[in-house]
Image (cartoon, rainbow, N blue to C red; front, side, top):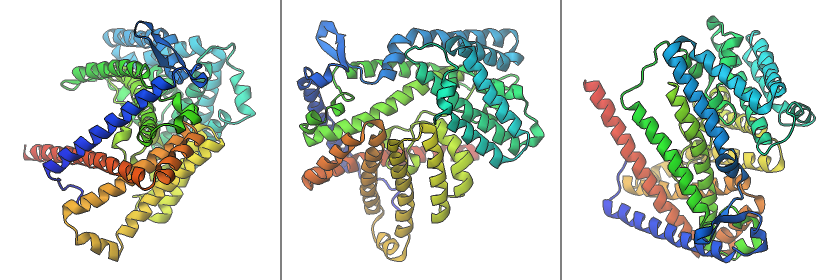
Length: 504
């Protein structure tokens, strides 16, 4: 009730005004804090010279972003450009061999980057999971796949396998863990799909072509084997009308996002401030809330840019990769919270949906969510902070279902039935605002630190209660209602499109 109900335009305008003003006020506080802390000792390591002609320094606390778009930018561009070039040549000369070309180029790139021994190590895992898939038992394939993944996440096997990469360079650990982790997930997907479709008789060469597709190899996103195999083996792929324009637009957005982050980090030191808890504790409540929110937004932008770049290349190859992650600003439901849609699709298909069914029963949902977050914990690398993150998000996911079941009980359901549809939407919007901050706090644990999360929780919920707490919830409520309005408009447009298609 109240889900598809529009609110008055004047009310939505007030929400927009409140939200804009609050974001501007919090941004001003962060800008002043970044300027005031510029000369602190704790800032010196991660705030380094940037735009000398404007006297601005840059926040370089995220080494991965700095490596991708400074030190290794040319290497990444060269590797992906080479892939696009050879793919185009193959498409013109021998389109029926394009999947082999992708695999050959990927194998050579991996061997050239990480060395032949690393390539042989991954081929060993591929062969092992292929052999297991021949047995035709899904439980065995999944168990072996998780054991293979654990060998890259836990000692002593991780130490032994890392010895297959000689020498050291800045991104070695990132590439090693990214390539090996995604390899195991892809091989497990292959094995499970082979069990589900024994009549297709997938071969080892199909697995090699799937795993060593370079744009997805090191950083994802992951496509399940059935989707990749069907798309890459199209004899004469045809682009939809306007697809090239959308590909160019996606590439342009990725470049614009990189430039925007570069500008942002010259003025807002959102990654460095949380490392100095004494300084962060002196921030106004509005700036501290904005800092917590900005950290999650940045992580979303980082994932969206990375997946946007590789997805652009994949679309040039006539593939339909997973969509970028949903913006954190639009998330007020735990069931939609993920920063990697490919891994989310993988987990849902092989674990969560398989165990949870339609996700309306409490016990099956609890079993499915616990199993899903157990696999996620293994994927992220078992440690105390990951255990805490998994527990909190698993609890949040189940708590949503418990509240939903409670709301469907007689007294609460009758109480909501007496409300107007607009008032029902407002009540649900308030619940969404509370959920939004639960999502932020639960994920801030892993994206930043437990100490900073405790500081934010104490300031916003205890020290600042009730003024700060209620003010932030009201601002968040305004944002949730605007997101709901956008979702309502999109759903209405989609319904109208389907009606037109049926009429035709």
